Image (cartoon, rainbow, N blue to C red; front, side, top):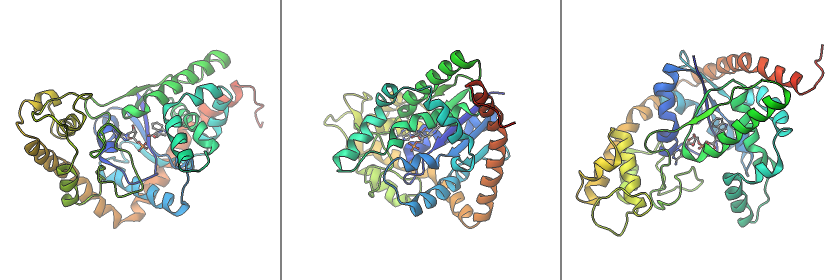
Length: 332
Ligand code: AMP
Ligand code: TRP
């Protein structure tokens, strides 16, 4: 059975982008057709200015939402990255395989480092090495497939390069993984700025639909989405980013494809209305289940505890092998 691994950072409230780009497939095909692990990658949340209490809260919330979105601990492994030491252990070895030039070329690093500097802040070293930790997350488990949104493609490519390089230098140790992306909505855009990704953000985010937004809030955000200067509804991601984003969201919610849906609508207003309702209906069961799970925090904690135990068992042998292969003396 193939092995699938993916993760989500507890850096903000989860969004419709997270759901459509990644999480929805995790609870759909991935957990049913693969031996799958899903991780709240909390160490990654420390790469930018952070508030410890908030990271803790968001980690718990992300775990609860993953279960609410349908991850079934009987079918897959759900755990928190920092509960399994193997990630950090392997990350160091991979830092000895990666180059500093390679890290500096990462688009996400360049963007986030620039934003941090623009705010007058300093850039944490862990922001630079972050993709190596991500590679360790993936490689520790012999992962075949990594279901992620578009923005993570470059990091998975780096992971492949590191796996191949390690294997060539020190003997076959790692499976070379590949990224898989959803057919539509691999990059959900911000509703107010349709040329930027819908990312988690600290502010209220009028262009960001959060998974826990009330239906009325979702409707308002979608109805106020920035559209383009044309009048007809056409699918053209470069020329008509606002409308195309709505068509992709609608297609992802209801099935069908964005080009086909473009032909169905004559006005932006009706497209927005249907998209808003489709998102509300898509998220309704997730929100309902989230509410139920919030009343039972012991259950969520139990899932994470068992998940970490299972993950440790899975990761340790491969990471031990890597330690030996690279030349470190076994403890005996
Ligand atoms: P992050 O929020 O960066 O931890 O991302 C968790 C997962 O959600 C990754 O697989 C991302 O690629 C995916 N993702 C995040 N934002 C979006 C978006 N706007 N559109 C599609 N996928 C996304
Ligand atoms: N870097 C990913 C993101 O920002 C999160 C992540 C960390 C991840 N480790 C991973 C995703 C391993 C897939 C596999 O979205």
